[in-house]
Image (tube, rainbow, N blue to C red; front, side, top):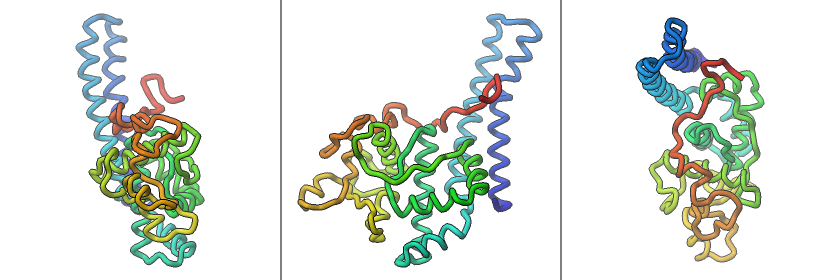
Length: 261
């Protein structure tokens, strides 16, 4: 990673350690000094508050890292080699779509999210081929590795459908779009059609737009939230649990007072 990325990654790693120290340290000291007593609540409550504040700060820094960290120039070069119709600006837009997908994963609580774009999927797969750089980047962005899954659309697999719904929900939230009644598409869902990607997935915001053009092979955004055309397996009403849970907690960590897995 670049020096800028490395600096940001170190700060995030320090926050991840500090939050557990704030939570576990005072409790451990109190237990060792006087044993378990009801008065330990006086230690536990401030520790929990401190942990929550540091967790929110850590998640905020991870989101900033995803949005602003420098990606290797090889990704844009590979994109333009694979899709000659893309200009340099177009390739940058695709990489913005990739960042939007990564933010959706983080904001979902690091639950499974599915990739809705073929051109962004190519960029993601290219990034993964640079194994060490990708692993370091994921450690800073998510605290763990994000494994690749191919681009797809709604089908009969409930898990994958809910993964797409989470992606849709958080991509919409990122652009202040109502995920149930969208008037436009979030960037990630618009790129394949925008750039005429062969075999790409073309989306329109509202299922009624498809009904007006019978015979269209487009997919519709409102189908993710239980609207017309959403008769697919999984949790349509709750966007794969995103709407009910509220998300954006940054997800759980592998660490804890007892250490890692």
